[in-house]
Length: 552
Image (tube, rainbow, N blue to C red; front, side, top):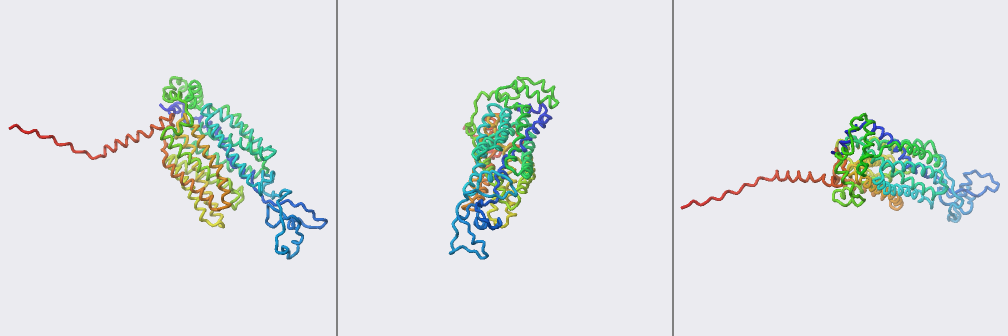
């Protein structure tokens, strides 16, 4: 019997599962606050060179002093000498030549009407240093990538709950240290470690949800977690609007993780993982605890180690085999799944962060556009949960990616002055990508067996982070060819959406436990197809019997 039957035996979707989802969902509210935080902590304000000349006893207004010191509209250079003649009514360049200019040697003056303090204003990440802003975000995503590799493998070896507890502590500590960073390199280091912790929280939260939930509730629970992230985007906009100083904002979104760390000790380790790790006694203890909380104490008391082995005889036996990342490409079906899902993860994250981390390029207030980008996730994820539940995972994944790519590609043909239409297309594309994210987390967990599920989630997370690291680089290519980012951001989801059609469907199927089970799921279909082919073949007439010659 499968582990899903064992979960039904101890209460199915009972009080334990509901409480478990609530405790795992609370940290997800803060995930968006760290993922998208640099939209506000690294926002670029209007700036110009700092004026260093005195008025020499004249009563010049600040505007006139700025006029003779900095060229009009220039943000990165200033006049070498004050151009007093520009104060004349018809002041023009002498001898039709422009005055000599130089870089801003005394720093910059920033418009602080919207953001009182950001990492841009604190460390002057403008002009020749403006690329450091993208570097900081790329390093954060690199941390998420490393975290996916490290924590994905470690949780398969040491357990989901233990790694989740550690990641909560690391997230709170590194986020708090970031708010006190004295220099930009130190800031980048702490952001890197924060990103690694964020990746571990996402991976282990998803796995614990999948492995403790009955089959028929997995899609709903997965979408609920996705909506928590959506609400977190609203929360980020509100907190950022109230706290305009980047250090206080960073500290505010980091301190709650110490609370999550404290209550995570109550969380129960995955009984499925315990059985696969060869710890049936501890798994039995956890299952009895679940049965007691779900009001099924008598059913839980009937369980013993032998009963667990009868439920998962094949899986406990398969633990003797050591599983590594090579198992993701060792067998044909799992190899095909790994290739297709890797591209899906990459393109979803690549296009998503290409849109979501570029809010200042829209012709709206940055706080409003953050709310709009968060609000679009509500209908998008609602539609995705309906199609995931009643149509299938493969259809949802493919359609979401293809529509997202087409929306981004359509922006190529929209004139620059139609900013509202361009924003609408970008919001629609972002909603489709949110649906894709919502589906791919669930889909990946259902496609891979328990023995390599976390390793596979780590691979998917790695590909997603490669996409998020690459996205800013593609954005920089727009300075040379403006439509190139839209072509790349749009083409990648379309191609990956087509690749997703080659994935097997998992709707209403129990979670696979072994690699052999994943491979064998296609065989019955093949046998049925062969039997059907035999039945459809026209009947061949039997040869007529030879007549024996009559004796003379």
